[in-house]
Image (cartoon, rainbow, N blue to C red; front, top):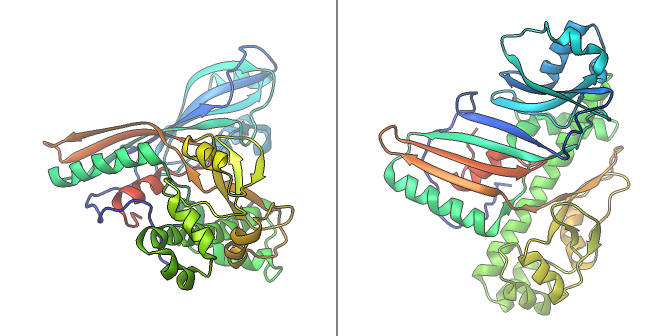
Length: 357
């Protein structure tokens, strides 16, 4: 299935290449560090290294296992990224002598617990687009205004699927016991790629449904979507670009508990006000499934696999969006903040209305 997009404009021309000069990420921690405790917190800048590669370099320097170094999330390799890592404070003196051309320690502090996966609020991005003409700049301005106003779909970015974009194919075989992988970290990464691929297919389908609901009358949609007329009528009345369906699984935003949507006007209002958002399925064991009409659609993008499943926000709200056009250089610079687990390149693809990798 081709990717569906939420914005209605035509494709926009610009050039983007993910490099440390044009793609900068700064991690926003989940909590303030106390300044005291047995864990050394380092704010680290890296370029042209993945988070795992950076941790490997530090671990080898200290003569320790990679797992002794804590981090909140994986950051892009082909970028300039700033993130927090944690070590036991007994390594503080040794780290004074650490030197690497692609890794710089910006600052340090202490805290009473190790940083773990998920211990981040979000990420702040700076991105430069090139070969932008004045007409395209105006279109980018308008696209950013729309994203700021209504949010955007939370697809997994191309980085999730490996250099050749096919990690999900191997991941499916691993998840179904049709292939083997000895390295548990690699195995989990590949299976996650398969879960992400199915999620993206489901989200594209839901965006396609949104487009159809906006374009056709209820009597025409009954045949197209195989949904009852009363449900289609309720969907057409919704102001939000993502149309909720009875049985959708919602989650308090930007974090909170899951609950089922039953068509209540109060929940539609809370969705419009960004207090809750809709979620999609990451297939697997222990996952919460949608119900009734939403499940009819979701089950086509579900699979029984030997891995734990979950729910993921299907719709997110970038914040602090800024855009600047430099006509002399034919460049457009933008800054924005995304919640954890969301991809800046997906926002760029929403603007471009096409794949950018």
